[in-house]
Length: 170
Image 1 (tube, one colour):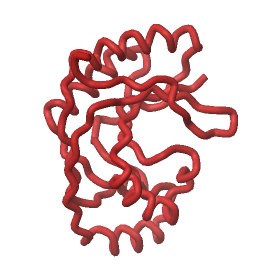
Image 2 (cartoon, rainbow, N blue to C red; image 1 turned 120 degrees about the vertical axis):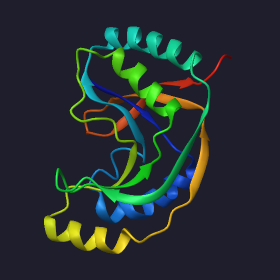
Image 3 (tube, rainbow, N blue to C red; image 1 turned 180 degrees about the vertical axis):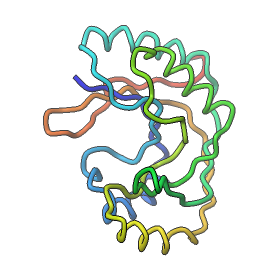
Image 4 (cartoon, rainbow, N blue to C red; image 1 turned 90 degrees about the vertical axis):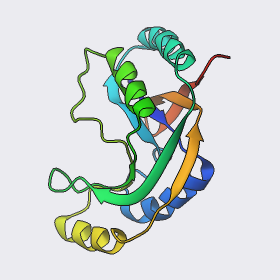
């Protein structure tokens, strides 16, 4: 089974992201807008129970934190992904690091760049046009993040929540 660890932003931010994703992201119907803490990895359901225990401990030791996004950016020329750039705070970087330490056998493909994808799998021309028009968009969104989620992938390719972890001591 494939699993992943993500943060889902508020409905307000998800609605804004989806206003772009429905046009520019072929994964729009497979997963809600999210910030990836751990990319997809293979594990058994038994492994997932152990991982959930470890993630629960990480969540207990992590306080809620602020998520702020202020601009649209791109990963080009590495790939044609357009995203809402999320400010990399100490708390977010620490959470990402702790989650990835628990999955040390699956090394991340890229350095952690906090973001919420709004467009991907675009041709070079599409990317150039879309990013050119969106790059001037002003964003000023801030919210408090108080949970993250362990997801698993269904047979149809969509993702669903396996377990949710609330930040801070309960």
